[in-house]
Amino acid sequence: MKEKARKKREAIVDISRDLFAINGFENTKVEDITKAMNISKGSFYTYFNTKEEVLFEVMEKSYVEYEEALSEIDKKQNQKKILKDFFKTRIIMHKKYGNIRETIIELLSIEKPSTKIIEIKYRFINLSIEFIKKNIVLKYNRDDIDIDFTADFIETSVEGYFMRKIKCLNDKESIRETLFTDEVFGKIIKFIDDSL
Image (tube, rainbow, N blue to C red; front, top):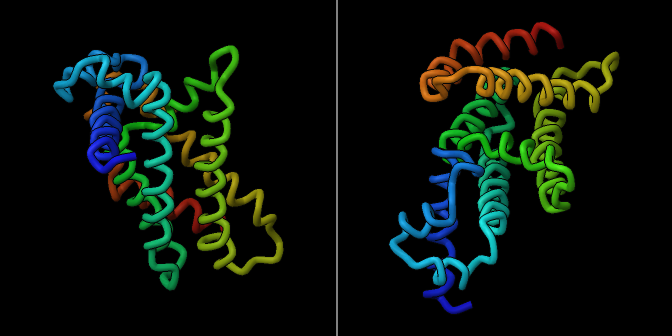
């Protein structure tokens, strides 16, 4: 792909990401993307066959950035500081990509979900679980716990807690401001630390 075409494709992905984060995937139309880009629908379809194809690119980009961000966390810190940095990373990703996982879950609930959606869902989950297992749970050095189960439980519990809070409340912007705070994460970290 030529450089100019590659840059145009990336610009479509970036604009789409912003629109998906603000409006959600379902509420963002191809027309919204083309209007924001100031391009024709024909130009959009030169680069992507469907809006879902753009979403897959957004998800892939999100995954790569999440993986890189997790790799940059200082693993020499104690477990509580690593957990705090882990949550901060997720906040940053959430602010940039909106709730991409919520979109994935919604797309999984349709009658015949795409295998790409299923695959990327598990990649995100497994990335988080492996990080928690290696950099948090194992640091507690306990022989009496099931490490895999514990890491999975932490990821599922934390993700479920935030998903439920975001999904059930109407004013999403004020929810994010009150939900993603040091105080809330401090309580979660204390709960996990006390449990382990």
